Length: 199
Image (cartoon, rainbow, N blue to C red):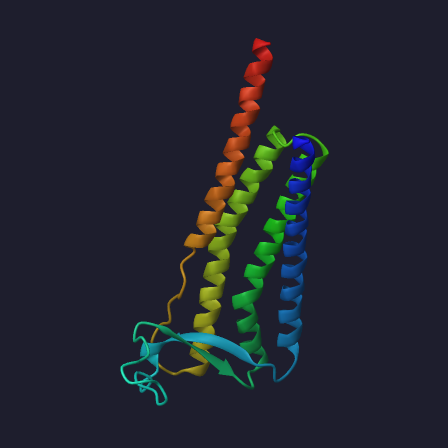
């Protein structure tokens, strides 16, 4: 009975990874297609400090101001093709990375359903996923930050450098968690091998 419950759980998790994989790919394609349509809007983020006069916009309640260290989302209503592609570069790489991670995890789960989850192949596959998540996340973060900075430079003539808003810590954290699961599986494989030699 426990095995049946475990198999059902693995099947549900695999179905979830399949959904995430397909959804991320579809979103990436949709963003690219929409961005290629002339007149499609594009959004970008700028630090509040770069926009003078936004500290106390009208319509806000008394005592409420925009955070001077915060960021504001701006929207280009008629961007050029280059600006639309820069906007796509802030979104699409992250979606593609999520899709690749989900695809690889789906393969791991499928193999675990078919045979034995505690194998050296599973541990190695999880280790690869962890590296892809961590290093790919760093690359995605850098590309998105650079694309946003260039997009801001095409719109605002501030002469100020726009640094990244977010840090890649979440990508690194997820990669660390996946690596920990890989080490757990590797430890299980090692313990099973030790038990087999004793028996």
